[in-house]
Amino acid sequence: MTRNFSRWLMALVAAVLLSGVVISTADARQRYEMLGGQLEVTGFLSSETRMKATGQKYITQMIQKLQIEASMDYEEVGIFDELSFVTAMRPEFDLAYYYGDNLTDGHVGRNASKSSYLGVQFDENSYPVGYNGFGAGLSTGGLFKNFTEGLWTADQISQFETIAMSGTFPLVVPTGQQEQNCHNCRDVDDTFTDVALGRTGSGGALYPFRELYVDAVMDDWWFRVGKQQIVWGKTDFFRMQDIINPVDFGRHFFFDSFEDIRIPQWIASAQYRPGSLGPLHDTALQMIWNFDKFRAVGLGNPSEAWAHPFGKEKATFAAFNTYFSPEPCVNVATHTANPGVGQNIANVCQAGDGRLPSGFGIPLGLSAEKLPKHKLKNTELGARFEFRLADLRF
Image (tube, rainbow, N blue to C red; front, top):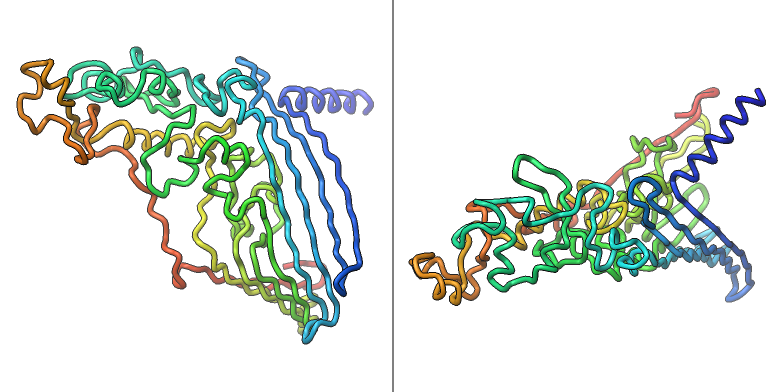
């Protein structure tokens, strides 16, 4: 048994070393009697450093988190037995991402120009795309034409990685913070400052407040209204019932607890506990109304170290819409300097026509992400009834 224990201990140590995770935490708690109630403030400060320990070795995250939770509790307020005002704030800052060109060796974050975990370095001369390759022809062609026509510099075009290859057609993803022409596309257009702060399109609403709600107890009723998390089901890594709040997988996939990666929603909740009903004991009926705007699962900014592959692929098609147009054109200078190319004036780029020098000949890019409008009919209702029957809990 001692030998088996030693093997398990060595395996655990090896796993920690392999993951390259360094975490330190300091916490505190204070209580104050004030304003006729009790104020309780708890908080902690944590520092988490993660790194890629195989192949190309570099730091992927260096997040500093400060979480403060405060509740102001009252008793016997009007019709309520208990009344509480609760908030949870979590400002954070990822040093590795913000100073990515230095701390991550250019693989992650601001001014990143090297490939991430999912891809290989992009080279417009090695990866042809579209009609006749990146640099071929003036009436058709790919990304290369954007800077031969003077729209972008070669350095801007080089900030891509190739995450998939099909024949001569690569799926390219921005590694830096290029602005993408994609309306309402969550996480695609976050600035490097927003990503470093965790103030992304998925989970950054009301930043740095994560939760902000009112609790009230009246006899057998319990009410909670505000920005909150509601957890139904307690199975680890298996969200069959825990589906009320979306989660942000872009921060650290599912390696962090769901408590940290759920996206709090504006919800009204009421729970009634009648007690025993015949053979059923510890009964409880909970009803909720999620009246928040629609929030999709967070996939991460494409330049983040832990961005979900789907998040990177979304950025691929946003890039197609940014750097390509269905029908390519040439600018006036190129048209004049190259007789015989684009003889028809219709092939010359006109102000406001939305065309670019590079094109596929078909509309391929992602121009917008269609989200449900914030209307009453798009809000959600839910209910749960739980009870204990003998020794079984349902």
